[in-house]
Amino acid sequence: MNLVSKKENLFTIGEVLNQVRIEFDEISISKIRFLEAEGLLVPSRTKSGYRKFSNSDIEKIRSEEHTSELQSHVRIS
Figure (cartoon, rainbow, N blue to C red):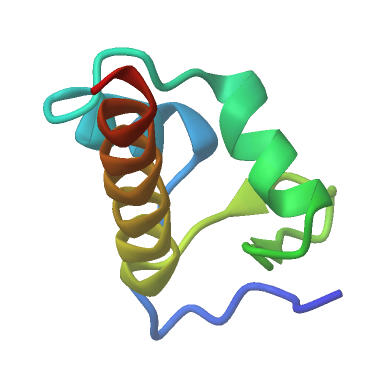
């Protein structure tokens, strides 16, 4: 478990959701937690256990959602 460093710009799961939902309205907190469970995201944690996501984590979510959208369009066509 990575503990939060005060130097980084980190975001709560709700803040991440708000940022990513602008582009991907289907994203949910459950999906973000799923990506973490699958090992695609490794957010830092506060001492009390809250997830803190970096800009890199947010970009991984965007990339994953973009890939998912492309795959769903290919299946439909």
